[in-house]
Image (cartoon, rainbow, N blue to C red):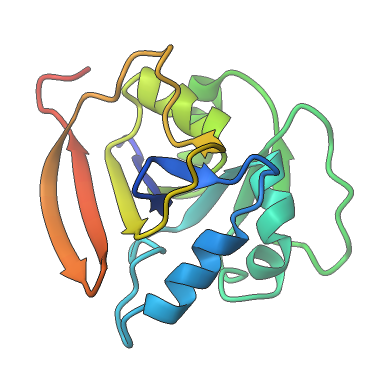
Length: 181
């Protein structure tokens, strides 16, 4: 059975997932103060493995290895090996073509949460490999920075499945269109 691939992340109203300096601190702070009590909007409930790019891993290293997500295996897609500490036993590094990486991940879990980065997301979405895209849209505008989608690549073939408002932020779930390959 094929694994379900869920991209889930924070985004600004103008479509950015990080500032030009690669920092997502403003997004994280805005989410932290708006996060509804008792509602999990980031981590897919049934995920059993996390896939991240190298820069995203470095940005969220603490949270992924000893923080709130350390109960899951974390696979880092990186061209260079990572220097891991003894405490980071839930982390492994892999490189390769994205379809081969997914085949490998299917041996670990059936619901793969893609936390970022933008190159990994664009590789998945431009090939219609993501089953869902879950976005927490925050009332911020960066104007410049790292865009969620690269407009030079094919757009994801998705349709809106649900939309909820939580104060001045929204939570949307976009699902792969049935006729998308």
